[in-house]
Image (cartoon, rainbow, N blue to C red; front, side):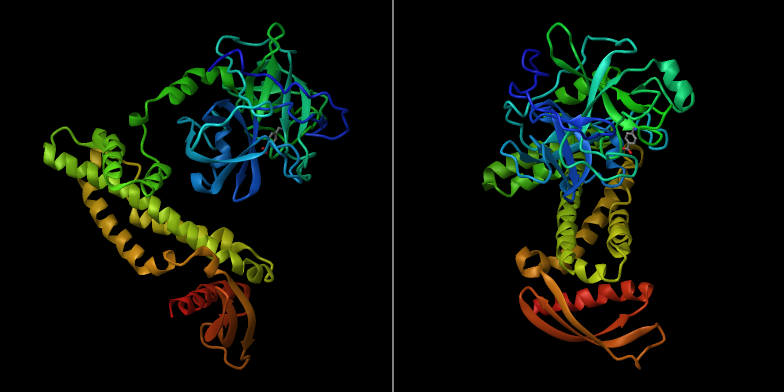
Length: 469
Ligand code: 4AZ
C-alpha cells in the first residue's frame, strides 16, 4: 500500500455547498470521499464502508448480524447520488466477510470487519483508498475530523439520496465515558461530535469512515469506523466509533495472509465451473489443501486425505446449497406482490429464513466445531453429503430451469366459502401464470393471516409442479 496515493480527494471537488444533513451536515462535493463505499443487502442500503486496499473494504461487524452470506451483499464504489446512475459508479461482489473474532454483538466492542472483494478495484480519481493510521498514534481531543454517509438525516428519519458529510471534533475518553456510561465505552471505541448535539452520524452511516487529515501531507487517515450511539444528534450523546489504530495489527495480518491459509470460499468453488478438466483438478487439490490442518494427529495418510476430501466436499456442497436456496428465493420473489396485499411480510422475513436455518442446521450439525470431535465430524459429513445430494436430486429440475422462466403471477383465486375444513382451509381454484404459461389448479388456502401463510407453500409448490409437466 503506497502512502503517496492513499487518502487523496479528487482534484475537482470545488462545489457550492447546499444545506443537508448526515445529522446536521452538508452535501459533499462529488469525489470528496473516494474511499467511501455503500454496502447493500439484497439491493437495500445497509451500511457504509471504506476502501483500505485494492481488494479490501473495512466496515462495522454489526452490519452482518442479520446476514453474513457474501452472495447477498453488494459493494458500490464511486457512488454519490443514489437516485442517479453516476459514471464513476461500480458494483462489486464480496468474496469473504471477516468480522473481528472478538466482536461482541451485545456491547458492540470490536465492531470492525474486513471484506475481501472478488476482484481488485481499479483506482481512479473518484475511487481511491484511504491511508491507514500505521504510525499516527493517538490524536488529541479537539482534533477536527470528518464523517460521511447516506444514513438518516435525523433520528428515525429518511436516508439521504446524496452523500452528506460533517466535521466533528474528537472527544477525550473520560468525556465519552461520562456522557454515555462508563461500562458501555471500551478502549476500542472513541467518541466524536458535540455535547451540544445536532451534528452526528446516524442509522445507515454505520461502517463508514471517520477520517482525519494530516496537516503536513494533506492526506486523509482512517481513524474511526462509525459504530453506534444513543440516538442521533441528541445533546450530551456524541456518536461512537471503533478505534481503527487499535486494530492495525489485526488488519495487516488479515490482509497479508497467504491464499493457502484461508478457507476456500464459495466464489472460489464457483470459478471451477469455468475451467477445463485438468486445470479444475489441480485447482480443487490446491483449494482443498486448506483442510489438511483438520486431520487429527493420529490419522494415517490415507484416512487423512479421505477426511480432507470429505471436509472439502462438504464445503462445496454447502456452497451449492446456498446457490440453490438463493435461486429458490429469487423464484419466490415474483409472488411477493401477492403476499404484500395481505399487508405482512412475515412469510419472507420469518418463515423462509427459519426454513433455511433449519436446513442448514440439520444438514451441517457439526460445522464450526472441529478437531476434538473430528472422527465424528467426518462421519456426520458423510451423512450430510447424503442428505444434501438427496435434496439436490429432488430439486434438480428447478435448478435446470432458466430463472426468467420461473416467474409466477397469481391472477385469480376463487374460494368456495362453504368448504372450510378442520384445519381452517378453504377449497380454491387458482389461476396463475407460471413462467409465461397459464396454469389453473385446485388447492386449499387459508384466509386468516396465519392459515394463509401456511397454505402459501402448498400453492407455490403446486404452481411449480406446473413447470415440471
Ligand atoms: C446506527 O444505528 C447508528 N449517532 C450509527 C451511529 C450513531 C447512531 C446510530 C451515532 O447505525
